[in-house]
Image (cartoon, rainbow, N blue to C red; front, side, top):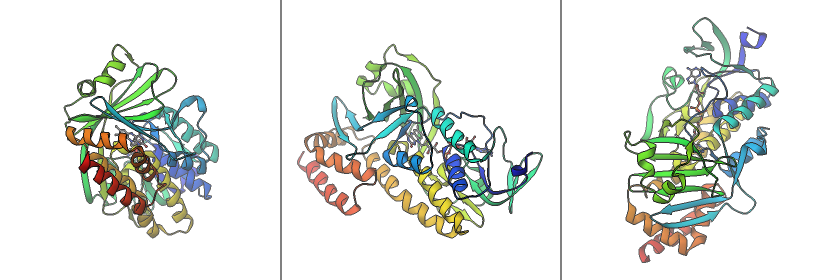
Length: 372
Ligand SMILES: Cc1cc2nc3c(=O)[nH]c(=O)nc-3n(C[C@H](O)[C@H](O)[C@H](O)COP(=O)(O)OP(=O)(O)OC[C@H]3O[C@@H](n4cnc5c(N)ncnc54)[C@H](O)[C@@H]3O)c2cc1C
């Protein structure tokens, strides 16, 4: 055990995107930081692998450089349903990126390591006590403890922060196919029972994720709901294993107790359809580090709530479409005929339009739906 592992100012439990971002942001504030994760890097996970423009800005603030060769540029979003489609660009000057989950993890871990964060891989945390993090064979004293251990967080349970304000579960699967990418957008396919998301993943692969309310409904079955996507993937070699995960809009009553704070999926989740989970955790990491610098975690819950409002709202708005094929087609017809409405919705989604402007836009959309 080296000197740092004997104690830490900030101990981060979980070294996924949220934990590594929290560690980097805390280290940037001058803290001695340790991260422990039960898995070995680079860590993979079921994910649509899209980074929205906010996430790119947050990566810059964290000083994380992702090699251009690991990414594909996303210029906007395309919705597709029953041979109809509508699309919008991100606001001027903004773009997103798609990146393999493992490549993102590698870049985050390299940045954390270069800053001097102590990274303990294959080390499962078995409990926490006041100012101590416990492993099977030892305990590490820590002033602050950050739970970044994902959607099934045990830190959340140990800290008695498990009470939910709201939760709605869906079941998601993702896989990569060797096929030449056909789009520079995040594509969302709307079906009767599920949605599919497709993004380019390098020069010769596409990442596909599907989500539905039915836990039995696997990727292959869902894909048949989207003939256009199914046709594009027909005969393409699957180059990754099918991975599953829960996708949920889940809000906690509390994300902080004493010297413990939750971040990322451990602190609540937004449905995968938003493509915002990673972005949100990066922004939470930056806010959390500011609170740590002030030695005052009491301000963190308000910052956390403020950051979650927009993605949770957008997830609910988008999921109004789920399971309603007639409504989907109607909405797509309006968005196609009135592209400025889609552009403004997307601008709000990425934080570039005020709620007031969104409300006015909502009236336009509502009127369009009534008259479609
Ligand atoms: C199908 C799907 C598609 C998605 N698509 C997108 C997308 O396109 N864009 C986007 O931004 N977001 C997307 N998301 C959301 C995104 O994947 C999550 O928000 C993100 O993974 C959260 O990261 P995290 O670090 O909080 O959790 P995780 O990535 O789950 O990491 C938690 C880590 O904690 C470790 N851990 C757990 N318990 C312990 C323990 N006791 N001791 C030590 N280590 C422990 C685990 O090994 C793991 O590495 C998607 C989600 C799903 C389900």
